[in-house]
Every structure is written in C-alpha cells, then in structure tokens.
Length: 131
Image 1: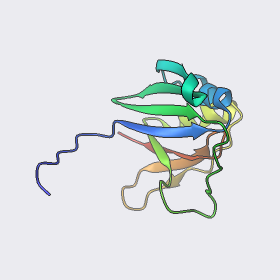
Image 2 (image 1 turned 90 degrees about the vertical axis):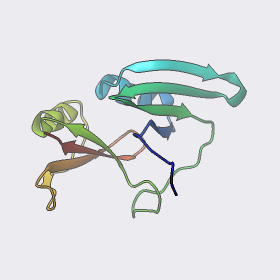
Image 3 (image 1 turned 135 degrees about the vertical axis):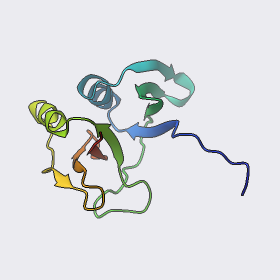
Image 4 (image 1 turned 45 degrees about the vertical axis):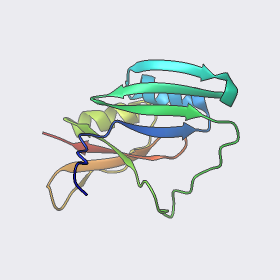
C-alpha cells in the first residue's frame, strides 16, 4: 500500500462505567486538560476530549455499556502507556492519591523503567520512563 502516511496517534477512546469518577481520574488526578466536554442527549452520553501532548483521550459514557474482559488478557487493545520523565515521582503521586501501582520493572530490550496501574474501570495503564 502506498500513499498512506500516518503521522501520529490522534486519540484513544475510553468508555467509562462511571463518567464522573473517570473524569476526576483523568482530568484531576492525571492532570489532563479538558479541551471540550459535551452532553449528547440523543445518545444519553457524555463525551470529554482531554489533551495529552499532541494526542487526545476521548472519554465517553454510554448507558448499559458491557464490561470488557481484562484478566486474563483478552485480544484487542492491551493497555495505554503514558511517557513520564520521572517515573519515581509519578508513581509516588499516584500512590499518594490512593492508586495501587505495581513495582517498577525494567524493559529488558530498552533498559527503560515502567510500571502499571489501573483506571476506575480497571483499564490497564502504564507509565513508561522517557528521556
């Protein structure tokens, strides 16, 4: 295939079971700025666009959305990873907010440190140390 020139990830979409809790988690706890937030009456659904560098997280609420299996790991999106410069400080901030964070591990291929935690719905999230 020629001509297809992907430039970046534009957004990742997340459907939350508890919109208010997820909004607090991503906006207040993780500190992602809100770009826009709208109530879509025709769908009985909130949509909140949050900035993450040049990308976005689209946070949705839908009535009666089914649960998604995570453990054991199912096919599909495995996790969402956030780059951080100071993994120790980021881990400490999450723990201070009452978030359970796994022990820091080292990527055997890159030598970078990383760890996992979860959002209010159990979606696996990763912190990956960058330069």
